Amino acid sequence: MKRSNRLTLFIFIAMVLGILTGYIVNVCYTDVYTYGGGNAGQLVTADNGSAGKTAGHIIGLSAGKSTTGEASIQKFADNISILTDIFLRLVKMIIAPLVFSTLVVGVAKLGDIKAVGRIGGKTMLWFISATFVSLFLGLLLVNILQPGHSLNLPLPDSHASSGVAAASMTLKGFFQHVFPDSVVNAMAHNEILQIVVFSLFFGVATAAVGEFGTIVVKFMDSVAHIMLKVTGYVMNFAPLAVFAAMAAIIAQKGLGILLTYGKFIGQFYLGLTTLWIVLALIGFLILGKRVFTLLGLIKDPLLLAFSTASSEAAYPRTMEELEKFGCDNRIVSFVLPLGYSFNLDGSMMYMTFASLFIAQAYNMHLGIEQQISMLLVLMITSKGIAGVPRASLVVIAGTLSMFHIPDAGLLLLLGVDHLLDMGRSATNVIGNAMATAVVSKWENSLEEIPASQLKEV
Image (cartoon, rainbow, N blue to C red):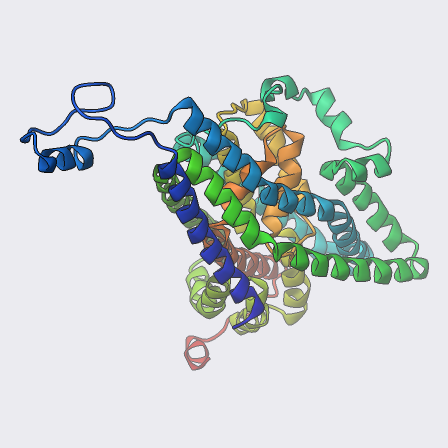
């Protein structure tokens, strides 16, 4: 079994064990059931024998937790949450160096505008537009569907005294938050947007100095690969974090909370389906009926990405199918790799959907201006970290802190993240294939492939 598959299996096992543990704790600290017409419940009509009492115990029960029981459950949740706190700290530890190194390398390689010229401009126009559409669609759907409101989770102690209202962002405050006065301070406090701004300047300057920047690019590329390896190490602690998170939640809320997970997954896949339709419609406007041929050709890499939960795994096959579709191989080799850093449509939708889901779970209201600010933040902070295991969680972790949303909410998603990642990865393949075909069309480099030849391949 591959290592990534083992981790997925361990996370699933940990989730199940966490649910069982939480359920046992929840039941053990529930008061003894009482009978008769009291507040505890009504006994089903029966004789006064033991059979009647048994029936009342099973059918007519109603239970409540005493103050002592609630305190015991809270103590259990607090203690086991130490594991989740450790994992969250490790995730925060990798944010700054990971974003900085990957984004500098990406921008430096893109920075040779003379070489990429017109194609680079058209490519980025599509990427930015697709990113905005994906993020906005996620924001719109999560506000309509309201998947997190049924959770009603209490705020953690560290956030109990600070609501989102106090963190309302004015236009002036937003831009002050964007531009750092000290990159060291930004990294120390994981101000991810400020890190991105510095990385953009640093990456462009690195490309502009020519040969002097080559050694820096190689160094930062090495740092990026090292940080990807560190990220892999950190993710090995995910099963423990999932176990602790599920045990704590089920102990406090009971099994009823699991219905919300199913609701969230279903609504997210509804959102992805909507995004697929939108991308196909836009592709139809530009490519015409050939968009259906494109979708037919990429079905194999799409299924590969879905089954492995990795859009990178489908990269070679996607490139091959795009060339069969008639795209210029030079455009394919330029646009597709950039797409894996700057155009992850499925991941974009997930970021707004998940961030607002967590806010809803804690009953934290975000005004429209704050949601638009979050959308703009995610448009920038999501760039340049492709290939990172569960990269969306890393970006979301940085964004939540900006809006004073408890980052412990990430653990609500981690147990089902692989199921969500499968859909995200497949959507990323569709988005990048569509981007490559559209740019080829704009460049008049999209060849007409005879139907007979398409059948052969």
